Image (tube, rainbow, N blue to C red; front, side):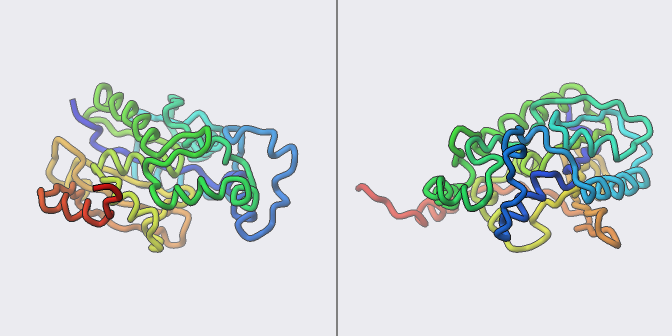
Length: 266
């Protein structure tokens, strides 16, 4: 069994929750009405901007891929709406709750000011250890990776040598990166703390994994290369293909990493 020949991950378009969060980060908390707070984040729809993003992403995908063998989508409405707007001609979507966004527990659907006021200590711990940290009543990123492993197991079992597309969420796509690329929690921390735009995952951004060198060359038994595409930009932005390098540590490397944290007890 092997992973698909091609695995295409698509983040949903801008959602009502995304729009509310961006406003809140700028000091405008007006979107957080009682009606907005009473909804679970799974029911957030796309904004007009999000629907336009999905339309543009669909155009790029249809030009790049004539067809897929399997179509998966998160059960959250914003992902389902995005998948439909992509307008892939032969799509028969399989919904999967393992693809739903990370559970942020008590921090979900709250304005930025309220998060900082009520959960400031917890958020400081997130900055210290983002991989294993768990939001109050929520899900750690490490736990999200375990969910993604279940999806990867399905792909191994049912979709070897096939072409697969998955429409899901930003942190879910990040979890796929961690597991497929065998990324350490140290590299994960570096990635999410980076100020480089290329390390972010934008709405309707695409991550394309392939078992073929540069997507067309020699076939490997594992994912050989990856590229990122932002079809919502004009012209479409891409990293181009890069080989996947899985880091291995020597004994000395491990001790060098450990030594960066001072021991508290002798």
